[in-house]
Length: 116
Length: 112
Image (cartoon, rainbow over all chains, first blue to last red; front, side, top):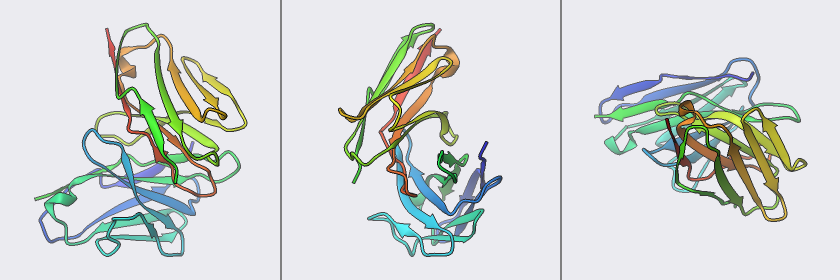
């Protein structure tokens, strides 16, 4: 089946530093990937849609200069949290749309970010 | 845009009983409806999905029904087991590379 690998699974960083999260589709090409944020006991909130070779589309209220998304290849999308603050601490999850008529959406295992 | 409502928010059942979770959606253009199971600290795992050209789909103890006219779909888990305890999310998408819109989730507890 379609597998999406997300790394790191957890990261602790100091305030003001940047953190990069990688999302790779292992056995399929993903022209479209999605980045979600999830707070404890809440649902997944879409942050942005990442399209290979073009600029990401951000949801309303998501700062594009703070959450940098790069989708430079058909198998890799990255999310960089710049100048991290404690309120950026959250669970970040990527997802990729699998190709074909019987498409689906496969999710990574998530990244727990803690900013101290 | 699409809005997905999910009920109940919590559900406790005795082991062996059935569990039903219901969702409604607002956008008639939505045509893909997956259900995900999420365990603590992990990403969502697809357990079953249904497309708008089908009214019902079953996979062992899990089934999903879709009523396009009423814009609602439901997850049915029979013969529940303690390992079914998790948070379940419904979602909807109109495809065409649009993202999934999620319901708020249902925390299912199966009591042994």
